[in-house]
Length: 105
Image (tube, rainbow, N blue to C red; front, side):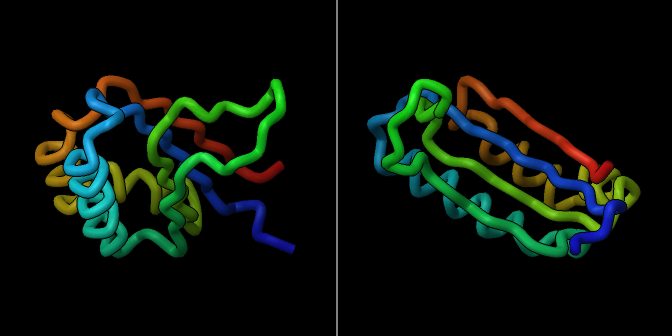
């Protein structure tokens, strides 16, 4: 069983130019660098799966899932220089970001 203290941070990115292989590669590279943030316990970089049901959102280009030990670790991540650099150097790539944060119950 997973700890109820875990903090899950899931981010979905819609690229400004979704057809651009260069922009896709640049965001992927940025997320890979972001994975070096010390407070992250686990991470996953994903793309929409080939599933097709009415309830599945597939219009995004990349997703970023991170697992933190607790909310305090996630708070530290938000102000970590690695995260701040990622936002500063990659924000021009996307036109929409949706974040889902969750904690155990």
